[in-house]
Length: 381
Image 1 (cartoon, rainbow, N blue to C red):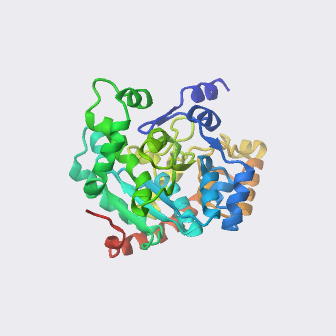
Image 2 (cartoon, helix red, strand yellow):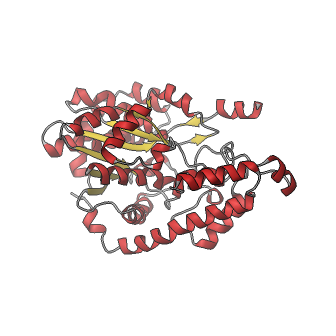
Image 3 (spheres, rainbow, N blue to C red):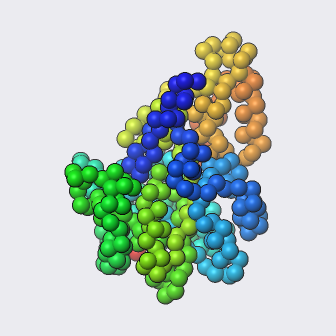
C-alpha cells in the first residue's frame, strides 16, 4: 500500500512527460476540468443513441464546456473538431485512442475535423530529431489517421510547416497575448529553453480559432485529447476571448498504460519499444510483446491463482481490454473469471493478443489503401 501511495504522489503529467500511477481524480482538481457525470452522458446519448465504450468506461473522463457544445448543437449550430499528433516516430495504440473517439464524434455529430500535425514540435523539444525526420514520420502517421476511417469530405489534415502561410499571422496574434511569465509558470520553461519551444503553444492554439476564421463568425471547437496535453489548451482558452474567439471546449481521456504496467509508466511511450504495440507490428510481434512484457495481476503459481484469483486492476492485459473489447458482457465475463481464478494469466493474454491482432490486421489493410488517398485529406498553402 505504501508503494502505491508513493507512486501516486510522484506521478508526473506534462505535455512531454508522464510517469507514475496517475490519480485521475487528483488531475481533475489540479487541471481544473469537470468530471463527465451521468447528466452529461445522458445528453450525449440523446444524440448518439448509444454511448461509445470510452464514455461508458470513463476512459474519456473529464471535459471543459462539453455542455456548451451540446447547447449549440441542439440549436442547429455547427461545431468543429480539432485534434493532432506531433510526429517523431511510429504510431502506437496509445496514440489511436483519442483518434478512435474523435471519429465517433465526427460520425455522430456530422462535424468537420481539423487534424494538426505539428511537425516542428518534436524538432524543437528533442535534441536528436531533424525537421526532415519529423516530416517523414508525419507522412507515415497520416496513413494511420486515414486508416481509421475519417470522412475525407469532413477531415482536413495539415502539417504546421506546410500550412504556416495561413497559420502564422494568427499565431502572431496569439503569441502577443501570452507572456513569458505565463509560459514559464505553465510549462516550467527556464533561461535554457529555446525560443522555438516558447512560441510553439501559439501555433498549437491556432486550429482552435480556425473554425471561426473559416466561417467568418464565432464558431465553437471541441478538442478531444489525452489529459497530458491540457496545459496548451488552458492557455488557448485564457486568451481566446481577448482575440474575439469563443473558448474552445475539450474532452480528455486517460492513458493506455505501457505493457510494463501502471506503476512504472503512466502511459505507453514510443521510445520504449518493449512497452508499446505499434500499428505496424505483425501478429508474431504482438504475441511476443504481450506474452513477454505485459504486466500480470495473476498469482505466482497456478494453484495460488486458482485459489486466490487475479487482480484485474493492475493486470495490463485486462486494462487494455477495457479499451479494445467493445462488448460489455464479454468484458464483464473476463473480469469475473480472472478475478475468481478460473481464467489464467496466459489465457487472458491470449484473449488480448487475438483482439489486438484482429484490429491490427484490418487497420494495416486500410493503412496500405490509404496511400492512394492522402491528397484527399491534405490542406496546404
